Length: 112
Length: 116
Picture 1 (cartoon, rainbow over the protein chains, first blue to last red):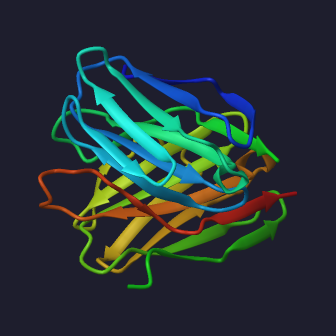
Picture 2: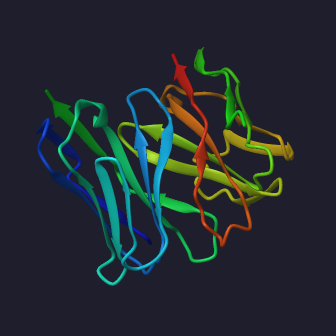
């Protein structure tokens, strides 16, 4: 059974600091997805990483994928309050199947 | 595009009542997914359809839950009879086919269900 684990599950940090969220998964996959969910809202797609070594950046967020280590990271640079949200990673359940397995989510709180 | 549309946005009902949640996927998307989100269990995939055909319903918790997709632009998730433990946020998501099998899914706003 495919497992997707995020670390940490809760993160409280101050504005201006840097931090990294980790996403480990238990089976081979060369695609990984990051989503953001604001409190009481829906999930919004942030990044789609399609191959080993893929790196994508949007503003203060940067995501990378290491398929050999089965690890993706979401790095936050100089955090600002607006980035407070829950971040989910997800992996294809089975190659060729249109189904994702999501991690537990990391609830990020950025304090002024 | 309007995105994935769900209705109702909020539903409060009493135990034993039938509940029907509705979803309109993004036009042209061939895949439709129903998820349930709770604090305890996180985000769970209940069922998904491809071209209106159910592909995997292994996440449907029990026979009280049923889902249909009568056409490409409409799906329902029905709970009958409802129980308090069904209280959750139910999301519908859709995904296009033919994009190098990229499984990026686009989520609707969700229906917050409370069963008293």
